[in-house]
Length: 282
Image 1 (tube, one colour):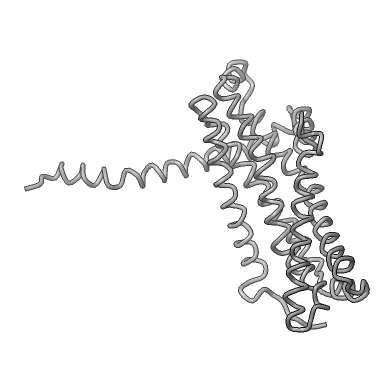
Image 2 (cartoon, helix red, strand yellow; image 1 turned 180 degrees about the horizontal axis):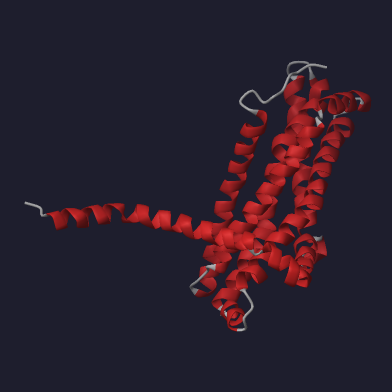
């Protein structure tokens, strides 16, 4: 017959994984809170580091600077995504004889779905992965411990500065992404498929809602903050040498990609509702 202590041990073994997961959630929340709380100190005492990180994030360093860093990568991603939307929209709408609505398709899909998601993926693959690798390398080489021993707070200096740099760089970066998607959609529809520029521009301007663009920027900012927080957490807590840094980068990219799609879903539901807040009328 099982005693009370045996029952407690079995319950403890069964619920130990749940406790570990809850503990990990608490560690994430504590780290994110410290990073956000350190932003005033980062802006006040580490302005030069923040400016340097903005330049590094936008234009890249080393070999990456040759192609323009994150600016060019995100621009190309959204450019080809916009072109793909135009190709699929023109052919799909042409099957039912309403290919003139390709301009509406580009204005609707680019702003609400394609540009935010593609830009979020680009951020995770460039500045996010780079931040994880940098902080992970500093952690395994004990540079973070050295900063702490010199009375330099590691989280405001390393994490909060990167968070602020990512937030400040995301606005012009995302502006370029949206413009690239619009240009690609118009080029594919007008130049490649030969649709009248007047027809495309009419439907594009009719269904391009300014508030949708504003909400799209809010969505991009939310994704940028989430990506930077996730990647800096994994980099800051990396362990196990170079292999551990690689594992941290992989875990961070996987988590941030899930968060990017989740943010898109949640904000879309909150802003547009189940109906999409859309009426097809001129």
